[in-house]
Image (cartoon, rainbow, N blue to C red; front, side, top):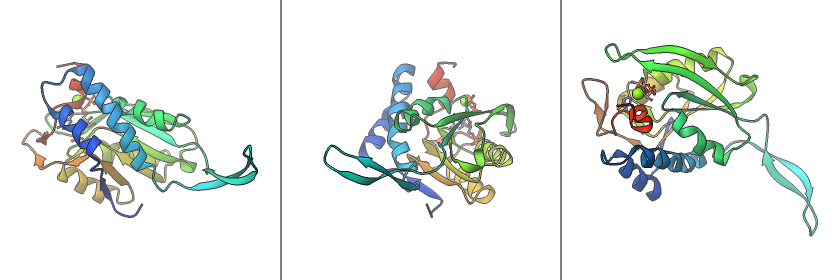
Length: 210
Ligand SMILES: O=P(O)(O)OC[C@H]1O[C@H](OP(=O)(O)OP(=O)(O)O)[C@H](O)[C@@H]1O
Ligand SMILES: O=c1cc[nH]c(=O)[nH]1
Ligand SMILES: [Mg+2]
């Protein structure tokens, strides 16, 4: 993947995203929609992953057929809202290994506070897909990717639902090698670091905590 940012403008993604943005959408429906959109985004983020061939026999004849190359990919959820995207990717890539980075954003400073880290082994040999629905200031995702690189990851993609221009710029500066896939690039951040027009606090809407 060469460009830094891909916006997935598929009509089904855009339709479902509108339903998610709507403040009248229930927690249960919000969670279900995020899972459905993530499956479609996962199709995009896994484009151009390397293939090799396996010699097989169809009922008709032998052939060298394409199959994914290398070690199983690692999927890393940035807690807690990232967990809402895990199932969608796992539906498409069921053999992926799964890791977790626990971070929350201090509401005053907008800096990430880390509370957990657990990654699959041999990260350096795997394609790593980090997931978090919201890329706002980019402080959380940049910090999560710092930790993944410290743990050995070299081939990392970032999958989110909504991005702000400020977060994309921050990621491009901190991690120019990390390709971002998102369903939408919104207008801006407000004075409290929330994405506008956005969808509010993804974790709270997903888990019903506010
Ligand atoms: O780009 P940033 O400005 O860092 O903001 C984005 C972060 O904020 C949200 O998490 P939050 O801190 O609300 O934690 P939660 O997932 O536990 O709700 C979101 O899921 C991102 O991790
Ligand atoms: O708009 C935002 C910004 C950060 N985190 C969220 O969940 N929503
Ligand atoms: Mg939150």
